[in-house]
Length: 295
Length: 295
View 1 (tube, rainbow over the protein chains, first blue to last red):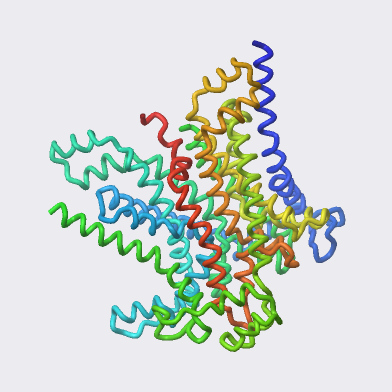
View 2 (cartoon, rainbow over the protein chains, first blue to last red):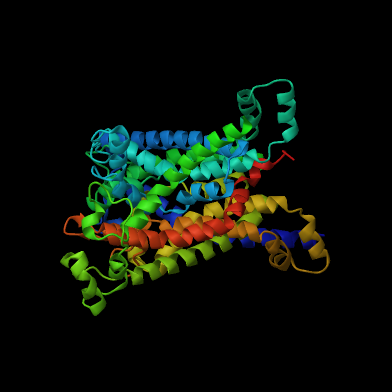
């Protein structure tokens, strides 16, 4: 028995080693290096060797946390993430309910509907870029149905550019929410619904009191995946608007990229990255604990 | 009456499917249009004679007779843009190797975590949290390390990064699959004299192969379209991938929309086909944890 126990011990360690090496090597070691650099004045423009950098203490943190552009980017990214997730859950769940109650040509419609999920963010950005020209197909379509000459500046007006980006992001991710919630709906036990209908409950009550509570864990999974990805929003915004006009669509990743890579104020940016990573780690902890606790 | 409502639901679903499909349609038609039609107004909804010049630019080297043959239709600006073929090959090498690596390493780790709760809650959350880190935040210090060991602009270097940032989803999906398999299966195989490692590869892995397929799809889509890391780690152009190529297809201030759309469509097709084949396992993999205690 003791021998078998030790063989179990070996396999559990053996199997976890590769992922630990990979994650510590590629993600954690650089992160720790970033923490060190964030306390110095290191910049690749001066010297790549971290040992040449001068120790600054908390200076970088003080100045990044009082940098309005940084704080604006954090706030904007959070707003984009939350409003995007809200749209995707509302539309995705709504469509899943439509399919649950039954539509004609179900297979072909659902196959078309999940196509956007397979596209990569940069290609989505390209598609929306060429559709949202001021003299592009979207405005042309709006002109057709309204009978007026519509010239909405989707990408160059500071009010509309963020909306265009959230819409492009939602176009690509709503299908995932749709797919996950639809698979949840298909598992709701029918006898409960029948019983509710027999006692005269309206369909709205059935949806609100039976279907939605039942698929809550599925909605939660969709929300977690979306939030994990949304905070990294980069590709779509950088391609469609490059963060502009002004800073209207400058997400955190774009800010860090511009300042860290293009102007090379690297140590300063490392401080900004460390703050965000700590914040996100706490958020991920609470989000994933809820899935882990369930499984 | 029931049929009336089903028709109404179908109508809404058709509208949603049209919205899901139109951007793809627009990119596809742009890829067969000549420069004058890319942003014509009113837009050309349906090109009457599809042109393949945009594809020829992508697949030919400058200076060759093949390239010269399309310059008249497309304009002289295209005489210097390099062929995209090496970059398509780069994308294939990097995305496939990263996917294979991530699925292998992640599956081992998921087994260890599912069976032995290795590292406990913290370890599992640590793995998932790595998915949430904004690429730029990891990239700043990592690029210093990569510069020292001369890994920048190599297939190997980018592939390892992709493995590290996508392995979290493999662990998540595979853990839910392993959780479903009764432990008796390996126990009896071990009782019949197989070592635990062999029991895992010969008995357990074949049972979860659908899960591995789903995990492979998810990581492939992520890695195939990844942009931020590729942008920062392939300066020099030896390992440039498709998304970076698309963003670089610019000429004298204007974008080459036709060739960009053509390359976008080429990048989209494998993901859509692969996605169509394994979509059903994907949903199962992401949501199985939510089913616990419901059956």
